[in-house]
Image (cartoon, rainbow, N blue to C red; front, side, top):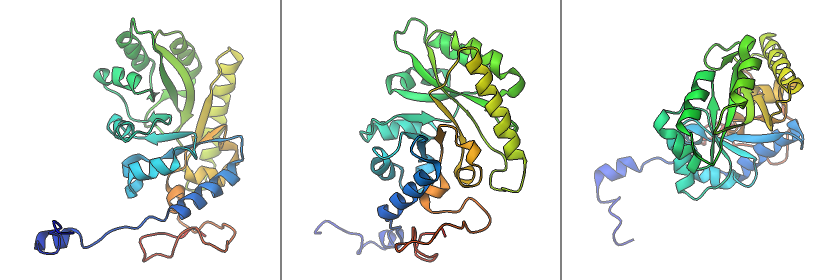
Length: 267
């Protein structure tokens, strides 16, 4: 190109000296592998946070938007970037929202994570008088100890949140602490606690459209964690979530190329 100065400018030569090539057929293969593992009745939230783990969030999201049920991001900034790129798919934001961000979440039709009754009450006050309802997923702390409503208070607080104005509870979730260590029984303990909370809420008339807990590791090591939605991240991009290779059946076209070509093979 006549106006391309990348070869005449030494600084640009250094800047453009490396690139990454993404093979979307490999991404699709990994998605199909996940889908075959969880079955057709389980929804998939594709994690595209952190620039899709460095693979290019917008391009990856555009490719996945009609192939998955929801896209998962870490912040409002990431969600708005996807909306600005014309992506209208359901988006779930894991990060905590500031009060001034709530209206934009509502206007952009985002679902957000709620980790406490107090947070839900503040959101409800912020949305007072609005006709639209903000979709939320309630996070339960089943043992990771990072964020979420404590398990022993979960049922009562969820039922209280359900009565707040401006909020509709769309889902319930938890995070696993050691799912990448399949031999550790703690993950099954977390699954059991989460299941008990869901069932207790349902007995009181509170039903959830989405129930999700499984990350990439749990998808392959803990079938009881699938519920009706899973959240693959690393596995989508061909990275094993375990400290050892996954024993996937070999295929004629391997999911990803060998190390050394900017990709990681899952086998």
